[in-house]
Structures are given as C-alpha cells and as structure tokens.
Amino acid sequence: MEQVMEKARALLKEWKGDAYTFGFEVLGKTGDIVAHHGKRALVIVADLGQGWMAGTLQTITDSLRARGVETEIIIGAGPNAPREDVYRLGLHVARTRPEVILAVGGGSTIDAAKAANVLAAFSPEEVKKALQAPDALAGTIDPFFGVGNVTKVKGIAAKPLLPLAAVQTAASSGAHLTKYSNITDLVTGQKKLIVDEAIVPQASLFDYKVTLGSPMDLTLDGGLDGIAHAWEVFMGATGQAYYEKMKEVARACLSLIVYGLPKVKADPRDRTARHCLGLGTDLGGYSIMIGGTSGPHLGSFSLIDVLTHGRACAILNPYYTVLFATKIQDQLGVFAEILKEAGFIKAKTEGKKGRALAMLVARGMIQFSKALGFPATLGDAGVSKAHLKRMIAAAKDPQLKMKLQNMPTPMEAERGDVDKLMKPTLDAAFTGDLELIPAVA
Image (cartoon, rainbow, N blue to C red; front, top):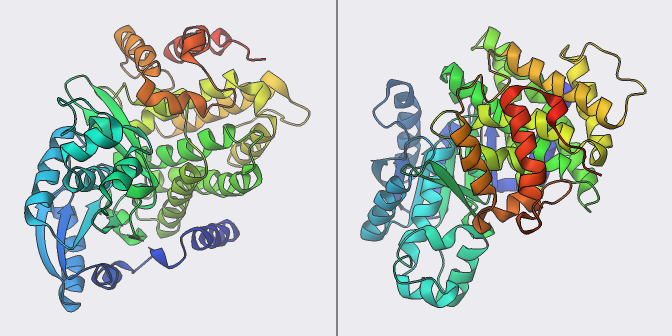
C-alpha cells in the first residue's frame, strides 16, 4: 500500500503544487499560509467550543499569532451547510471586511464560507445585471446555483472575491480543494450546488493527524463520499480526453479508501489507515475537478433528512453501476480488481463482461458497505416513496442539469430519460432488486 500512497502524494503535488500543504504534523504551517494573503483574518470554525476541536484550533491560532495575523473567530455552518448559516456568515464578512477568510472544518463549513464570500462580494444590482436575476432573488444565494455564475458576476462587477484559505478537518468531501459549494434549504430538504473556479480556495491545508480523533460515523461517511467522487467521475469519463488521467487518479483513490476504511473501523487510531483515507479522499477531490459527479450525488441531495451524504451515495452507486454497464467496461475491470483483492468479490471475474461484470462489481460494493455496517437499499435506510418522488423532481431542475450531463450516457429530462431510466434505477435501489434496472444501449 505504500506504493499506492506514494503515487497519491505525487498526483496531489502535481495537481496543486505549493497551494496545498498535506500530511502529518503540518497544522502549524497555517500561519504561513494565511499571512501570505493578509494580516487580518476572519476564522470560521466548525464545531467551535467542542472538545475535539480545541487542540486543533489552539495550534492554528498560535500559528497565526506567530506570523502577526490578527484574528476574529466565529462559528461555522451546521451539517449540509444550511442557507441560513450562509446568510449569517455573509453578513459578518460584509460588515467586518477582513483581508482574508480562513475556513476551518469539514465540507459544510468550507462550502458555507465559499458561498458567504460570494454573497458579501456583490451587490443585488450587480447580480441582476450579470445574471438577469429578478429583484426578489438578486440579494440571495439562489442566482449563483449552477455552473459559472460567480465568474459571470465577477466579470461584470470587475472586483475580486476575498482570499479564502481552508484547513480541512475531515477526510471526506475535498471541499478544501475544489470549485464546489453545496448549500441546503432545510425547509424543502433540498441541496443545491454552486460550481465555479472562482470559489476554489487560494490555499489549503490538511493535517491527517487531526482525523485520529474523528467520530467513526463521520470517518465512514467521508470515506464513502470519496469513493463516490472517484467512481462517478470515472464512470462518466468514457470517451473523454481526460480518461487516462482519471483512471490513474481513480485507481489510487479507490484502492486507498477500500483498504483504509475497514482498518479504521477496526482500529480508529491506525495512523497508516488514516493516512490512506486522507490521501484517498483528497484524490476524490481531484476527481471532481477533472470531471463531475452524476446520479448518486444528485439523488443524495434530496435525502438530507434521512441519510448522510456519503451513505446515500454508497447506497445508490451500485445501482447506477449496473445501469451504465455497457459504457464502463474498462472502469468495471479496474474496480473489480480492487474489490476482489480486498475480499469483497469472491466470484471469478476473469472473462466476465457487460452487465454480468457490472453485477459482480455492484454486489462487491454492496458487500463493502455491509462490512462497514451500512444498509444496502434505500428502503432499509428509512427512505420513503415520497423521497423517491422528490429525487425525480430534483433531477428535472435546470439548476442541477449538470449531474444528468455527467453520466456515462447523458440523460435529458426533456426527452423523458429521468422517468424512463432513473426512476426504475431508484426503484431498484429502494428494493435491492438489481434486475429492475433497465439496460442502456
């Protein structure tokens, strides 16, 4: 596994260069990173006041003080980055105008900090001019959902966002490395997405040692999210110019997480396994900067009231794997080899192809989830038929269309693909019956 770990380090360094500091015992470098962007920092911290965060925050503040950085510390966002937290943080940024924002936490706090930075930067008039947003929405986060809208407003307004640095504390979403900000409307139970190069943190740091004290549920969910990032992008890479690079990244990512998660479950203090998860989920972040996630991520956005994001993706991915069997034969071979080596596929894979190979991989993924103590179907996880309807409705939302386009065979809601292909796949995920999944030519 050391060889795979070394490969992962090389891939991350090739991608991010000096903009990313990662590994063990690197938290004390936070001050160097932030001071490069400003001397007055607003520090947005997840779980502020919680015991497990205290030591991490103390190391960070000591590092900032040593570099002469003046700080104000406020609490970050709740799970799934509720829009209410985004507005609270955006107002604080606009009122205090720090020179640099430092987000410390997992994906929710980092995503909320990205969105708050956007809200604080632009006036409703600038948003209306750039995006033709109606008066009622121009001062909200809604016009920025979708792809590239921040960049459009930034161009019209001719002014930059504040520098944003991120310290990751959970091996999960890769939010510290990416152009994504997931924001949730808790009233409707629906998550939406800002996708824009303009919101990528200018600098980021992840000390994998911090994860040694992470709660087990958070660790397992985060690892499954990392797998979903790599696998969904890898599936959708068929025929793309970036296919070989994505194959390289996915092979390392999937190997590290499939190896690391069961070991961390057995021994939460296993440093090597924690290192594998940190590298693996970071490569998951790399994956979603190469390409985009698809159906499982889209479905998870409608399940926030019953399932964590990682678990929702873990349940849905095997079923989408079967749906796209004929388009992902090479990808299936790669994942089958990894799952077989780890003991989650017992049957012979040699000579298998088409839907038969997809079935083997899907069942291997399901066995992996079961080994972690996770449910294998939406029904077993407490998802209702009303949730299935919500998932279908969300799939037809134009602001989430990119998820349909990222599929190995892109879906078009207008021609009925969501009802014809996605609905029976979700029915299969609800019941566990893989035979319900239609064949895609």
